[in-house]
Length: 470
Image 1 (cartoon, helix red, strand yellow):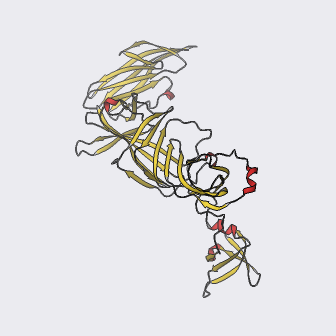
Image 2: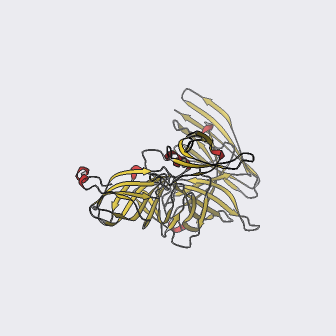
Image 3: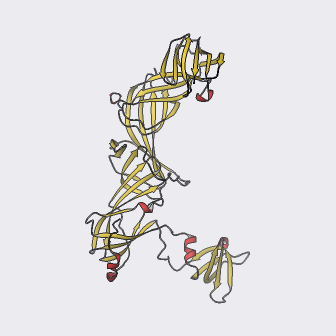
């Protein structure tokens, strides 16, 4: 905000406009980030008197960060200066009204008991404590302690001027000349976020899939953003404080929108990626909205792998008694993809050949994935491929261990399978294979991989001896 003006020079022309209210937005834009916050940009026409003005900028988000507000007069950047700002969030409710009516006249309609009807009590409200109201009768001067539960109606003369109906920024502004100006206000708010969800449908042979993505926007910020330009930022943007978690809400509205208009356009933006919706859209408060992120990429080639992991340190492997099912594919333009994919959940389906309906077969989480990178999804564990492993021999010394491992793979399927057996090596050791019943490859410095082929309804046993030193 522009605040460089010498305030003392203005005291001779102290003219305060009486709480002028900024008009409804002329233009609205919202940029939403992964970690539950957003940047709101509003353009409104505002009327100023010459000199000092008290302005009310209503309808801002309840979860606004008031320290982030930036004001700019678009018609003339030097025409208006903001000298002070207050964020007013003491909104109209029973407690806030009663607090302001202490020592003021009120009227209470008090419920009757038995055959007695309701009675009207007029007087001065002296206190509103917990569930009780203390009223001094205007005629007798007696103090009445009345339970709120026994009050049918409370009558007050008028709404206090300092009590607002919506969250409001109240500014002390100085204008060089009177008239209307188009102004832009930018601020950040918590409790608005987005995430990506993807759907992958495997074909019958499980060697290709159709891949699509949707964005889910969750607006719990305490404001609606009508007919707004919507942008999404994907990436790990650093903030100096952890994101504030949204308050629990009891009502959620799901608005699934078909992609019958312009979708998101993706482009690099600094070290992140920016997704801009090619049409306006309205984000209601306390609403969950879904919008298509990417068009469906069809026939993306897939590699399906069965992987079984072992280690001398059992805590290093995810499942010591299960064969993991993984599918991998490339994020390439030639496959209909080739765009930056924001982090999110990938749900995998496959059609039941009996009736053609899609059945859920697993899911995994992907991180932010650049184009031309490979995606690997761990979607579940094999049912009919049963592993069993054991250490058959072991010798330990001061700075080494030599062991022999036996891995039996039992295939109960009606077709042959190949299983990768990965021995995971601790990061602080050197290793070598002394002998093995099957060939191996050094997948990386900490993974020794064996490929075990097993015929239909058969068993294959891998044995190897490894020495690890440190």
